[in-house]
Length: 110
Image 1 (cartoon, one colour):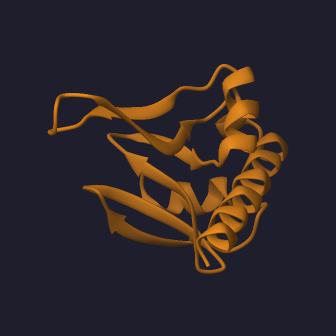
Image 2 (cartoon, helix red, strand yellow; image 1 turned 180 degrees about the vertical axis):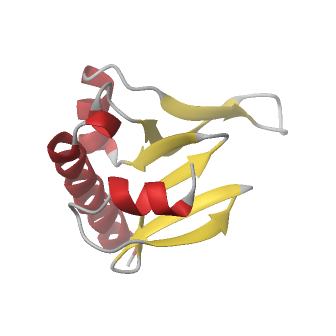
């Protein structure tokens, strides 16, 4: 997904900044990472609260096999709900929830 398409997808939330990250792209709003694009898939950042909502919507959490002991490692990023990328109003709602989750995560680290 090119940067213009990502900016368009998040336009309901407001301006986003896109940087290279994990061999993909990090998507930031107001200086807080809210999503990543990796292997041509866009994933929203979530905390436990928002992750439960995404799971209920049928989304998949990003996991990978760690190099230590070969265990699955879960990352705080989830696939988009079906149809979100085709409906600007729905995408805006999910993006706002992702931003709120990212703010909660940032607050918990300070």
